[in-house]
Image (cartoon, rainbow, N blue to C red; front, side):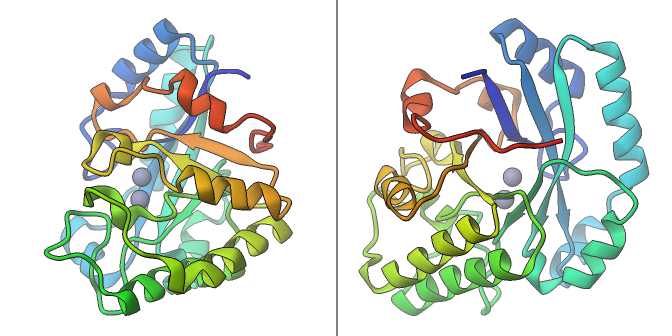
Length: 249
Ligand SMILES: [Zn+2]
Ligand SMILES: [Zn+2]
């Protein structure tokens, strides 16, 4: 399998300080063949009012210039659309006319507006966990995405696995839906560098995906700092054994 990473944020995202130049140099030196920058497109009112709307045109030029400077590494201009199902028409209007590949879909907010991508004030209660997976199900059932990103992200700051037995049926529905809609499941590495210390989704969910007929896995470091990038290990690659990479154009 080639070394690739389809989930990286650079300085173009409000929460990353990675310089595109540094990323390309590091990726080439580590032997990566294919990477995707996937800047945030976060369009909920509470996000827009703080971070504003990114300039997609400037992002396009940024990626084109990086690719021209480093032709030996395939650079894809991707995007991570946060809570896509809640802002579907707005997001589709913004990305129309651009060729983003891959398009990642992710859930960052619960219905009660809890942000599950940052350290939580307290662990989610069972109904919030249920809501988290319902949001993911709505996302994958309704939005045109290539990859479902960081399923289970709320656990990143946990020190052990919470009980999810009451949402197994929802996780199954999410997996069946992405299989039916040809959406790849991401192995997200961000929780390896956080207290949780495991990949998300965890190996047992990857096995369930395989059992249900899932074939496509994408690896994403979700890097926001240059030190985060390049940690794709043999152990991580072992989880992709028997799966295919996403087929992107
Ligand atoms: Zn995210
Ligand atoms: Zn991300």
